[in-house]
Amino acid sequence: MRNDLLKALLISWSLLFFFPISALAQHDHQRRILVVDGRPGQAIVAEIGGRAYVDIAGLAEITHGSLSFQADRIVLSLPRSSIDSPPPEPPSEPASSLVHGLGLSKDFTRAGIEEIATMREWASTLAYAIQNGYHITDEWAANYREQAAHDLRLASRVASTEADRNALQLLTNEFEAVRDWSNKLVQERKSMDTAKYALSANALRDDPMSQKIVTCGHFLATMFGSGSFEDNPSCH
Image (tube, rainbow, N blue to C red; front, side, top):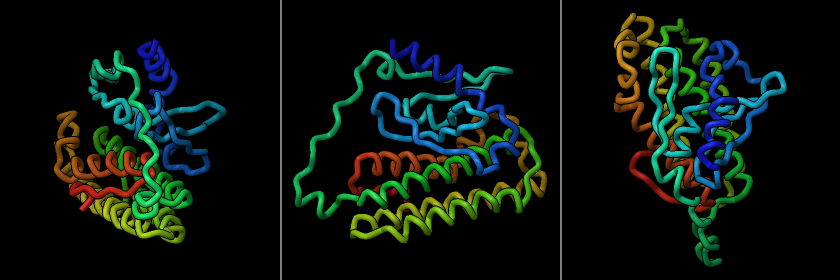
């Protein structure tokens, strides 16, 4: 039954991957957080024209699946455990002393999740544009950068605990990594040095900067989902 649910999600939401880049660049749609069977992680859900569409890269991350591109098809492969195994039990409530030291405040958690969603939209849209040969400019990338910077400032304003401030540093590191990666790809596009990414579906994914961003983003999503601060080398 769970397999049928995931198939239905793919059929109804995978169209987001084929939306024109200009449509994704608009920020007048609502963004929500998708939860699949209580699994940690998040995917951008956009409401456009009364319908809900999900970022398939985010869905793959939540389900620990992998994407492959075959001519006119996008294939999401799910690990056997995602189909047959029941969802993990939610973690037990930590002791009050641990919550005081490591717990993230609700307002900061909400702002942090919004920032992660904004950065994911920025990175995934840019990657799609590069892989498919779309023309991108500094101004185009700046729209995403400014929105992510705005959401980061909002998260900074509501950081009220030591755990919040520690998590904010990791969130800032991820923003700077996405910004530097975005600048790199825009410059490569200007110099016509992005053909290498179109020749192989894995070329951009295997780029060290890209892998670092994905690893840190997945960790941050899990951390915010748990509500407690943790550290990870991928975010430094």
